[in-house]
Amino acid sequence: MLRLENVQVAQDDFTLNADFTIDRGARVAVIGPSGAGKSTLLNVIAGFQPLTAGRVWLNGQDITDLSPGQRGVSMLFQDNNLFPHLSVAQNVGLGLRPDLRLTTTQQDQVRAALVQVGLGGMGDRKPAQLSGGQQSRVALARVLVQRRGLVLLDEPFAALGPALKMEMLDLLAQVLDGTGATLLLVTHDPEDAKRIAPLTMLVADGMAQAPVQTAALFAAPPAALRAYLGDSVDLPRNL
Ligand SMILES: Nc1ncnc2c1ncn2[C@@H]1O[C@H](COP(=O)(O)OP(=O)(O)OP(=O)(O)O)[C@@H](O)[C@H]1O
Image (tube, rainbow, N blue to C red; front, side):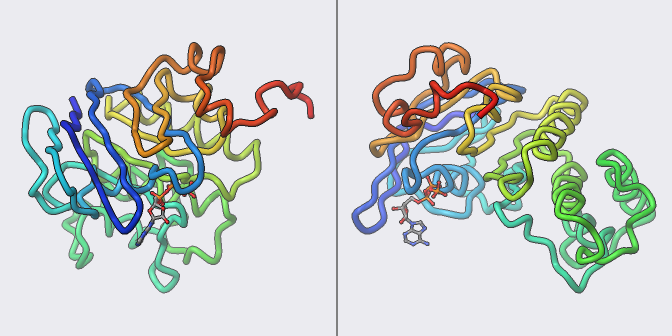
């Protein structure tokens, strides 16, 4: 279980408050206007950004003062964060050991993660020798290989076309089915939320609200969500 208890993050004129609980194994989409604090929220949970007030709990442990590496949390950033001079396998291996001194078992884990995302046999390539979709798969494999209980994805597939993005979301769901990890997925696309996340959290007006049922939220969006979605909620699907 992830618990943000009276959390506040303040920087310059920006403030984000959060007070919510997410059950272990839940899948939550994080949606809201640009600049509302979605990335900030993930950074706080991952330990990359300090709190001004409050505590963060993960499975009963107070992780507020732990470094990112000690938290049992994996985070995937918007740009995939692949290193062009390293091979695909090395990029995945970084998830296990930043110095890449992998044991034979860890090398096997890297190979298995690459197979899992459909990149078996491509470990020796450089990222530039892969398509955009394949590069996203490498980044996902790096998250998988860590086998952490909480996975934070910050618009991971935003650069992909619709079909490829759906494919990646389905792959992600399949992988989470296997590991039982909790997911927080930042997205600007309501369809992403509907496809993968039974719960959705709205971040708006300085507040990360408690997650609610995705279907119910989009069926009757509150004012802040309506303002963000604009008319797009009413557009026919084929437009
Ligand atoms: N490194 C930083 N230093 C100072 N302010 C920052 C920094 N990064 C973000 N901010 C500010 O913090 C606020 C929240 O930004 P954040 O990136 O969390 O929003 P977001 O909801 O993820 O936006 P987007 O959807 O555009 O990615 C914004 O006002 C932004 O300008």
